[in-house]
Amino acid sequence: MRRNEKGLVAKIKVGDNKAFEELVQTYQKRIYMIAYGILKNESDAYDATQDVFLKVFKYIKNFKENSSLYTWMYKITRNVSIDIYRKKRNLSSVEYGEQYKNESIYTDSVHHKVASPIEQVQKRELSVKMAKAMNKLSDDHKLMLQLREFEDMSYADIAEILDISKGTVMSRLHHARMNLKKYLKEYDN
Image (cartoon, rainbow, N blue to C red; front, side):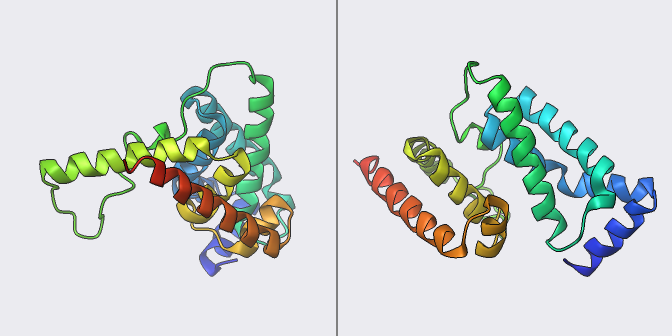
């Protein structure tokens, strides 16, 4: 666990509300995106995010700090989201990729330049192709890619969260990437 995380956790454990507010501000968007990736519904993802932070507040004293704070919170988020999903299984779902409709995850954030109209169209087309290809993947493969590529988690963290071996993570990611590549080629025509 990072040094600044340890300090934050220590402050929260002794009842520092400002430290908890800092934790919420630091992780709120990521927790929401994870919940949305599972639930595919804004309202449910918002509810899940609230539930996650309530659980974090309630159980932070039990956090053993063997893993990173984010890994621990990710597990809570996944469990809360799955519980909500099971309760609302028959509701309509939003396509995977809608979570990014207001976020340009395919833009070059380093240069902050304004894209030309052609570049904007190309980026939008790529985003649509990616969403369609992701929708064709199994839920397991979507989750693997989301954790590794969008959440930038290590193989070890993914293995810990999903309670599988690191080798299984690597294998599933390989198959997920191969399938995604195959599905993306279908949209190149």
